[in-house]
Image 1 (cartoon, chains in turn yellow, green):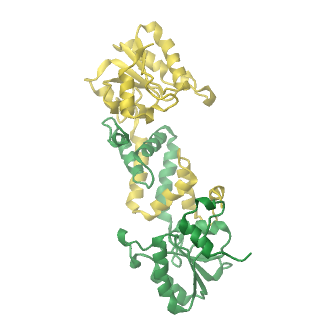
Image 2 (cartoon, chains in turn cyan, red):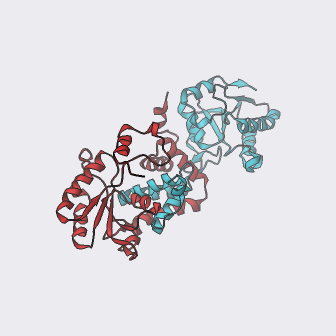
Image 3 (cartoon, rainbow over the protein chains, first blue to last red):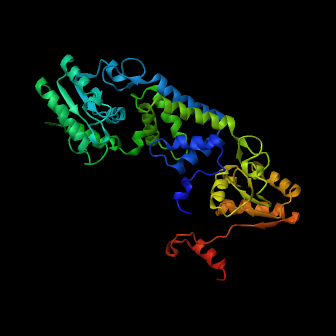
Length: 208
Length: 208
């Protein structure tokens, strides 16, 4: 028997089990085998663990929203970073995803603000400028005392394209635009970079 | 800084997000990185997907129970196999987990009944005879028209130990006890087989 046959739904799989396997399989990086494992693990585990997990899944959608200023995730109107007056208000670090904020903050090398685009320009996936929080960034640069914008998109083709698109918008505003040093491995994913590499890349950022 | 640092909870991670990451991390084979990915995926996805997933997790615990006869998973009292009168009632295949039932049934090579032990003897993990459905198996062999019991525990030390313990219980009952053949896996490479497997394959060689 090869791997393929394991994808066939078994006639013996009862409906609630088959449905949970299917729901787990819809998550990124979870194949049918892992989905089965997770399902049968929950079947064996305490009812309490399933309830806590289900509750956590629902609450994350109900309670978490986007910061009205930087579009980072938040509970309440402004995120932890935007509420923190001790952070350097003259620097905005622009990233693709909320996870990137965590990755950068973990380095300890950055104490400014953030701006989350929620994606990158990817015409093949139908993601264009208007789908990203670029206008919102431009508005911030105009209204806030911003001196430097760090374009920390992923160091790959789509990230570069997004950075240069934003650069074009920022150029007339007389703000300094920088990009983290290419100490980051080309073709990699910012979220997976180790904090040291990411920290050095931020420190070595260069004028565009 | 290496991988370890990514396990530190970030001060920026809002509570509902941190909690879902933690809940996902409690699942087998899900590390903190994967847990983050899943959490942020759900944050981005439709609210409907989170609700369906949470609902499926709760329903699997509420609606699924164990078959009162063979301890396979079921909705209702008896499982699909036990309800199926066309299955060979003279053979019981004993397995460790419900997932093993699915694996065996998928082969199409077996049309008898099952009995799920829900574990294997593992003294180091504190799992002894009384934690498994062994007494229930003995009771079935005594009360049902069983002629053969296939001991299909995993082919490892703990599985073997469990099989031999059950064999001792079955011996006085005059029922045939068998074990699936040990040998080379189909599609495998003789050169890569471990000495144990290769040894079993040679010992169990069959006339062509």
